[in-house]
Length: 288
Length: 253
Image (cartoon, rainbow over all chains, first blue to last red; front, side):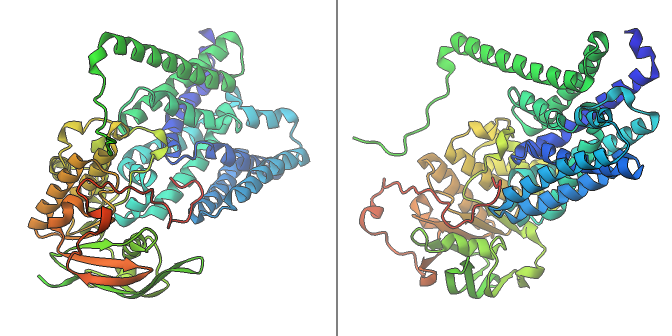
């Protein structure tokens, strides 16, 4: 516990908590529209931004926000067009992004340790300025995702209905794309581009095993994200493990615990109330 | 009450150069309950999707409430009921949450729901007989109950025009009756209805006009034709999967 007296550990903890809260708040919309892995793709693109930032001696996070936003908008345009060749376009974008990142980092004076910090996260090297960026952008994501929940839910649930309701579907889709890019870039410092999707998606997957509605799933996923971030950083500090990987493994462990407990509870309940089984649906056709 | 609600003039729709609708002209006036009938692939779903702007027309014009479709913005006046509920990626949603989406057209994106919104959602749930299932996840409902959820979502927006795409396909008898009742109440309140159907079933007494689409053209417009052959048998259950006329979208639900 003494470790948390050091400012760098406090910054690591606060940064992780902000991301733990914001990532699932956005991730639930991505899971709902079956784009659970899009965070991964945007992360790949963000890496080019990191490389460009290191090469140009600019803030890698800031350049990565810009490049990832452009990439996310490009992915959204491909998705909205719905072309079958779209997945090839996405593949080009993803691999181009990561190859560009590795190339640009190699051209700069940065070492492979720098590259690792972005690939797998480096919570303990967060500077006070980094923390301010993470807190401000994280709060913006959180407020937007919660305040616009009815509209974002409608667009993610049934896009055609949302269009006939006169909702600004294209704007809302772009908003989700940009929010994904921003979340990926701030989470990059915590868990790294290769593990970002986990924080967006795993808490949602855990929550939806036990919840009944969208709102309760969102609340539970945010609580789980917060828990994974907090205990992951604590585990990393006490056991001296990599913080990003610890956070993600805590999140996955929570998923397994809930999955097993949920299955066990259903078995117990079925045995306790054998007659409470739902009545079968009436047959549509009766064969005589 | 004879002002036109929907006007289609010489409408033409094609997918990838293959014509689906050729020269359709149709006017639906306020208070009418018009059923578009036709075989699979006749273009009847495409017709209502083009009326709503979900499918672009390549020639002709569509007018909604005296406004060209392109400049139509009063979407709260229309309640749309699609063929089925998307799976939605597995994130649970309660019946009430889905029905509450129907208020967005009236409320807008930024305003949080108020008392009027909640009572409209309650009324819509009652109208389709699902008030006791409001807190249940939609995925636990039967197909017919899910269809009724979508109708409640459209009714919650208190529209003047309901547009329904195959509302009774594959729906159990109890849900068909509940649906016919909800439709009767809506029409009694002055509403206009345009629906696509394969067979009418319990809806038949509610329908005031039948439009039969055949090979992309209107083959009949007027009284409801008598069913023929095995379609006429009272317990004939006509169910088809309907995805034939939608181009598959990348990662579309």
